[in-house]
Structures are given as C-alpha cells and as structure tokens.
Length: 164
Ligand code: FES
Image (cartoon, rainbow, N blue to C red):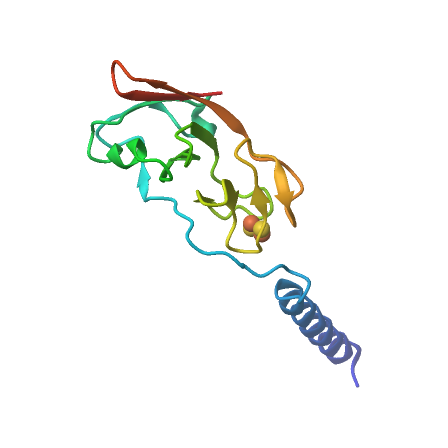
C-alpha cells in the first residue's frame, strides 16, 4: 500500500469515527426529554411591528423598548399567562398578573424558550432546561441564567416598557 493511499484510508476512518461520535452525542440518553406542554412564545413582534418603539436586539445596543398594548400585535400581553417574543426578548404576563421579561435564547444552545404560565417558569423544548421568572436556571443542561430585564407597565398609557 502506498503511503498516500494509507493516509487517505486513515483519514476516512477517523472522519467516520468522529461523525459517529458527534451523532451519538447529539442524542445521548442523558439529555432530559421534554415533559410538559402548554408553553407559549405567542408569536413575534419587534422592530418593524406597529406598537413597538426602541431596541430589543442585544447586538444593536442596550435593550430598552416600549410596547403599546393597545396595538394588535401586543394586546395578547394584557391577558394573564400570555407571552410574546420581541426580537431577543421574551415578555410574559404571569398568571398572577405581573409582567416579566428575559432574554429569549436558551443559554445551553440558543433555542427560543417558552413560557409556561401554569408552572410559572420558562422552558426550553430542545433539551428541557428550565428557568425561573427571573431567569435563573432551575433545571439543566443549561448552566447560565437568562438575562433578566425590568418590565414596567404604565396603566395610564397602556404601555409596557422593558429595559436592562
Ligand atoms: S438548547 Fe439545550 S436545553 Fe435549551
């Protein structure tokens, strides 16, 4: 066997082993399976949506935006238990009627999380990480908290301001 041919075969074998390892790693049985349903992200809104003003995209600077809850895209947030993704943020109104906002991307691998109002927590459907209403990790595999934002409702204007 020629040296070049040998090296080619070794390269293919190593590649096959690495691929197999990667594929098995993506579906390892230790990953928690989703066990709850009923979460909601409530669709998206943001930069180009009527009723939105400010910035909800972390890469564009400090998060600071206001939602007009009389605008069609955001009226759902007037109801307890609902949630809505606004660019990089997920805003929710808890079952108790409190507004909360955290970064939408799971800190494990970036999946957009859902809000489960009945459980009063956020959950990632990909591997099952769970986060409190303040963004702290309740269940892994995520190890880092979500970013929590201040959410302030102005009843005189029917607006919700979210900021860092
Ligand atoms: S992406 Fe893995 S738990 Fe969210």
